[in-house]
Image (tube, rainbow, N blue to C red; front, side, top):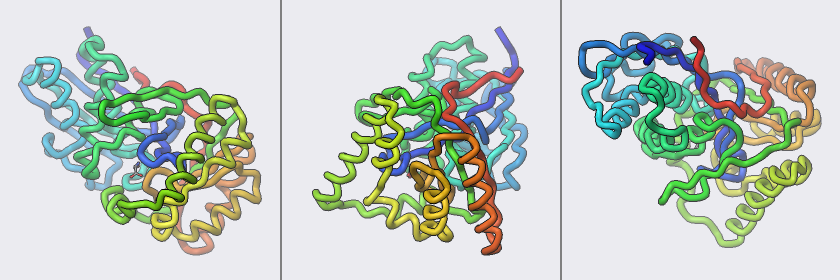
Length: 311
Ligand code: HSE
C-alpha cells in the first residue's frame, strides 16, 4: 500500500448551455493537483496551497478538499486516519470551469487510491458534492461527476442520485475563454429565477433531449442546434463582458455552439476541428484585450479519463 500520491483532476464545463445542473463534461486542461500523504498524527492537515493568491482556506474544516476527504474517512470507518494534503491550484478560481470541483475530486481520488480503492468512482460522487455544497451553498453534481468519471455525463436524478455516462462524437473540440472577471457561483446561482413558464420549460427540455440524442447519434449539427438556453443564460450573461459579441465571433468562425461554462464568466464553443477551436480562442482573446480585459484560453477535446495519478 502506498503512503503518498500525487493526483491531477480536470476542469469541467457544467450545464453545457441547456442542461442547468444536469449536464457536464471534462476537458484535458486546465486542472488541479493534490499531493496526499499518510502520517502518524491523527486528523487531516492542509500543509500547503499554491496558485490561489491566498484565497483558499488552510483550515481543514473549511477547505473543500479536506472537508470532503473527512466525510469520506468517516464513511469508510477511518475517521482518525492521519492525512497531510498539499493543493496546487493550476486553474483560475471563480472561473466557471469547476475549480473547486477539480480540487475536491483530486483529493477524493487521492485518498481512495491511497486506501486501495474501497469505493468506486461513482460512489465518490456524493462526497465530492459535499465539497460543492461547502463552496457555493448547493451540492450540484454537474462539475464533480464528469471530473470524477471523465467524458460527458447526465445527472438523471439527484434524489436518488443517478448519473449516466453519455457517448460523444470523437471529433468534438472545445474552445474555452476565461475573461478575467470574478463571478462567484454562489452569487450566480442566486440571480436565477425560481419559477419558469411552461412554454419555456417545453423549449428547454426539447433542447436537452435534442442534445442528448445528438450525442448518441453523433450528429454534430443536432448537438449545435440543441445547445440553446432560454432560462439561465439571459440572466447570467449580464455578468459576462460582451457575451453576445463573443457568441457572434465564435459562430461566424466555425463554432457549432457557444455558451456560458458553468456559472461563468468562462464561455465555451464546440467546434468540429482543433484548428477552429484555436482560431476562436485567439480571436475572442484579442477582442477582450481591445476592451482592456485579460483572458485565459484553453483548447481541448472531451477528456474521457477523469483524474489521473501523476507519480
Ligand atoms: N450547474 C452549476 C451552476 C454549475 O450553473 O450554478 C456551476 O459551475
